[in-house]
Every structure is written in structure tokens, then in C-alpha cells.
Length: 72
Image 1 (cartoon, rainbow, N blue to C red):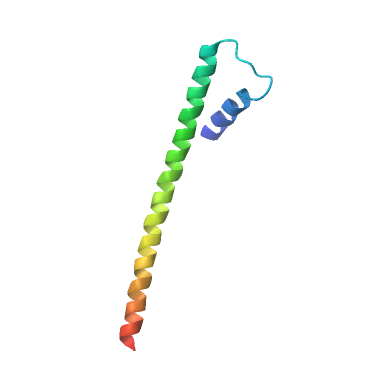
Image 2 (image 1 turned 60 degrees about the vertical axis):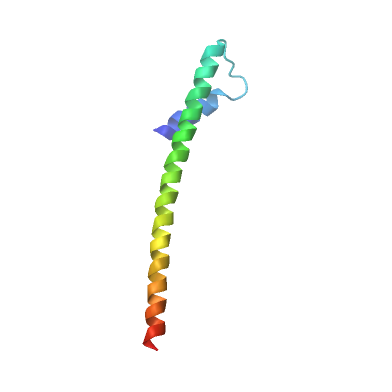
């Protein structure tokens, strides 16, 4: 749903779509900024989880390597 709202706002800024009221343009720009910020927050959260899982996998690799070296 957010993608649809974002696309509609982006389309409203295309050539030929004028705003008669400066307040309406300001409100649209603020809405656009809010939607973009929410998207960035969601992406950042996903990247944090991905980083966490990569650290866990890296630690498991270290443990496995240590066990292999101790087994020789």
C-alpha cells in the first residue's frame, strides 16, 4: 500500500501537474518525505537483521575452524 501512495505522490510532481495552492504542494512534499523516511527505516531494520545473522554465521565459522585445527 505504501508503494502505491508513494507512486501517486511521485506522479503528482511530474511535468504538467501544477499546484494552485502553495500549501497543497507543501503538504504533498511533507507526505512524500514521510513515506520516504518510513521506507528507509524499514530498509535499515532489515539490514540490521541481516548484519546480525552474518555475524552469527561468522562466529560459527570461527568455531568450526577452531575445532578443525584442534582436531589435527
